[in-house]
Length: 135
Image (cartoon, rainbow, N blue to C red):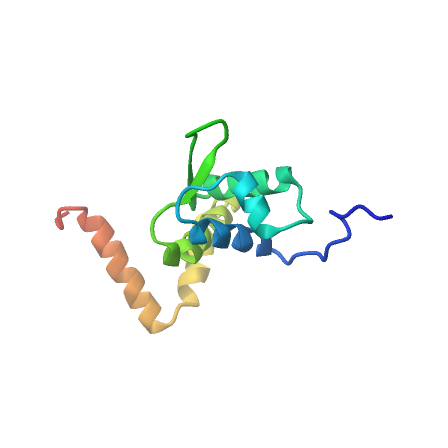
């Protein structure tokens, strides 16, 4: 008889994170690893769910609190912005893993559409202006 954890179909890259995020987003309030595990059904180990939640928290997508004996997790911000937050984290990770950040950024900018380049210019100008709108 095979181990039920290893007999489930393999998930694609990032699929478990998306499933966990969907559980957290659908919940009416903060959820624990046990809550997520119950929502996702069998085939996963508690430690797998806990590790996934902790990684999502370290990426800035989830926040955690300890209202009782276990950590409870909630989305940071709007549920519609989860994918954007994960993409930004991946971009930061690529930049941090390369010695020549300017080269990576130059390649990124070179592949932008004209509209995306203008959006980036506007975002950079807004960031330079600061919260009060002035430099």
